[in-house]
Image (tube, rainbow, N blue to C red; front, side, top):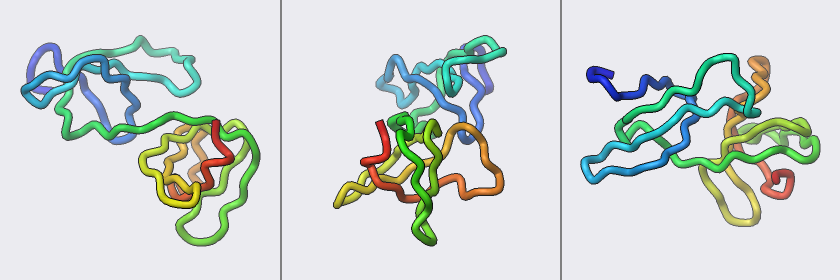
Length: 114
């Protein structure tokens, strides 16, 4: 941010947008996965171009990856879904818990999410 009232975000920061302005900016507050945080919630303006609309979903059953481009999941994982394809598949990114040894994003069946 270069002015007071702007929110500092990094790639992967989850925000809840509460207002969209005509000038191409949105007012948002940071969101912590799982609702628990040791940091205070921050809020402010960010350019709409840096925000991507996602739906947060919880995995309800374990699902192993089915090859390249798919995302293996464990029950309880938090997933940010950004795209939906035909035949019940969605594209998502694992938000929590972090698993650096596994791919962070990929295609998965919608039926394993709530």
